[in-house]
Length: 194
Image 1: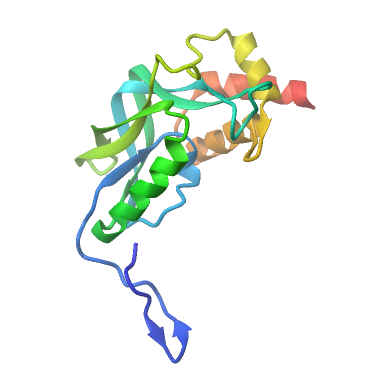
Image 2: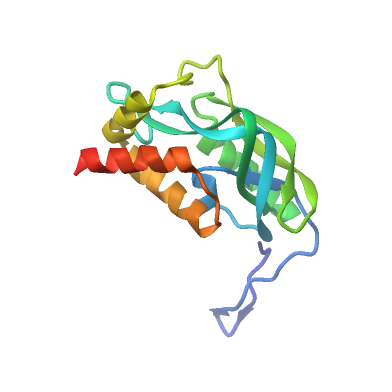
């Protein structure tokens, strides 16, 4: 987002934006509402060929090995509306290191560059994380009941699975994105945890 802050009389001024462009990052879960990095642009974006799903057992952040929760993954088929972030070139190495630590600690995801369509009509290559179906944390096709049960049970150092799902749905709602099945899971889980 910026290089060196504008400092005058010992006070920090507004950030100075860089003219050059870096890479795009596509978020579909917590990266949408908590990217954790600076960016030049942010736009709603569409990815074809993959959909957002609660398909990963969370044993470290939103659950434990004994009581796993669920988090999102990009799984094959369909399409996914999310958010794309443009990085400044100078920020790319730092952000890629950050994303590797954040997303790749258990090897659940396969990072890739795929084409996404921004809401202004541009098509860009974006860096994103696809679920690895062969990984032990991939859930496969869960029943509605089992999904709700895991969302209710999962609590870890970063919070609960139900909070994670609520935050994701809140952000999708503000973007005008309908996710009917995820809303049904959340409503059912919310009734059970009260």
